[in-house]
Amino acid sequence: MPQIWVSYEELGNFLGCDGHAAASHVDAACWPRRRCHDGLTRAKVPLDIAFDIVQFFFGVQTRRDASNALFDKQRELPRAVQGEIGHGFPAARKDRHWSNR
Image (tube, rainbow, N blue to C red; front, side, top):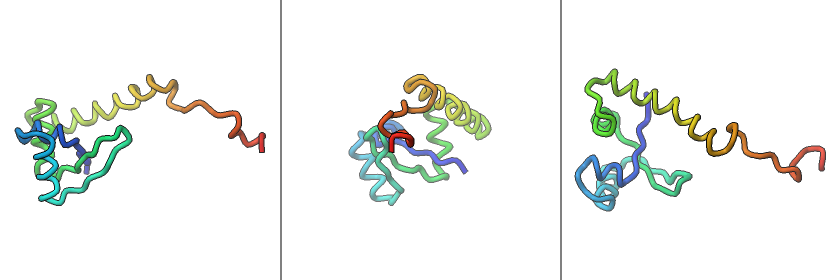
């Protein structure tokens, strides 16, 4: 099953409130949370409302369209990351090379 993680601000847009109210909602509902590498805290959306959130953000009408939209975004992500850091691999540091030990 796919996992949908949204920031408090994204959840607030969906719920029609601000990020602080969305964080309170997540806390009251005991949804799993994690701090991501970009510094934002995201909450894992339960499956019973995941389709509604995907429909809200992508404007899809059916569950099949929602699945396809998520798949397309997942395929785009590695390309975007590769563009930022070259070919997807961080530059090797010479001082960390095994032959320098």
